[in-house]
Image (cartoon, rainbow, N blue to C red; front, side, top):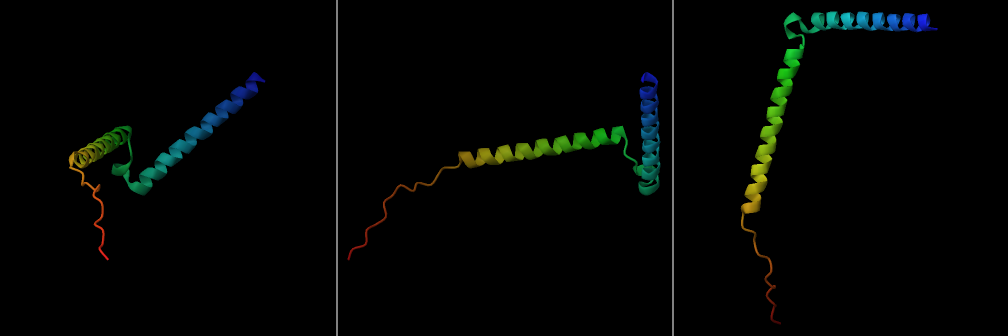
Length: 84
């Protein structure tokens, strides 16, 4: 049974390796050699996305702080009674 498991595992690894190579080849053909995503490019894109989220969070914090600092209107006056 051990030999069968090894054979199945080896076959699975082989299929996955060929599928990955096929995908990489198709990607290069479709998007071009210079536009293929790399680990470096993915990391840089993630860094830029993190910076954008941090900037959006800081902008929202500043907006909330500005709204909290504004004086609130007082609405505790009683309406004037109309004389008949």
